[in-house]
Length: 275
Image (cartoon, rainbow, N blue to C red; front, side, top):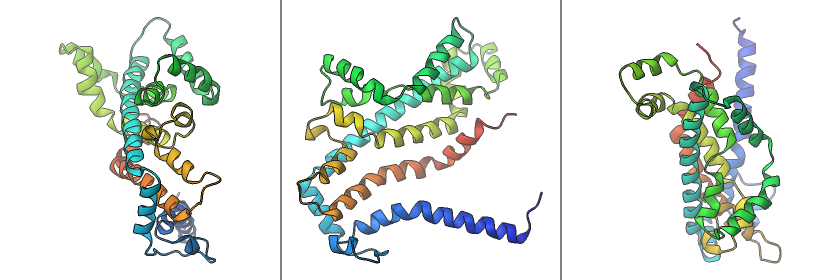
């Protein structure tokens, strides 16, 4: 059914307003990172950039090792994302295209892990990490999140739409199962893997609770921990450097999303459209 012109205008107005409401908080973080404390709390608030960016960044650098925290976040989130995407693709492919003993039960166990809140697993996870002497280390930050149930479930749903005829043709040509997976399945599932990669990177980048528990050294701090320490009670709080830190912390997220957004959109739709 074709919409009338007034309906189209209303739809476009609504979409434009939704875009403005979504983008404005991010835009204002970057505006506030260039303002002094007095300008940030001035009413009405400024909506244009000021000239205090370098001062705020310098004050941030003198207070916190922001670049090391940024590197830690990139390492932890990057390795975790690559691992989750790779192993979820393999396990999801197995659940979608292979028949094996207790397949339904094992997939049920995967679904159960999605439903368990992370807060209930923090203490046993911390005990395991402590027993392994992985406190204040990349292993302690990364290893517990190398695979997750949501990634397996997401890739299994996407893999179900992959044509089985291509797999049979590859096997008839004598290709091994690993060759079929790496050379035929993975290249065709890149949009879905990119979508899972973006979701995982976002989740890991904003992970605050687990680093707060397992890290007590400044050398291993991440961006969320750095921002929290800037705003601790008892300190002289300057909001310009806090917004500058938040602006720096958002840059890798935007780079990842802009680089993969084309795959992200097609990947999110591919599982919902069945041929």
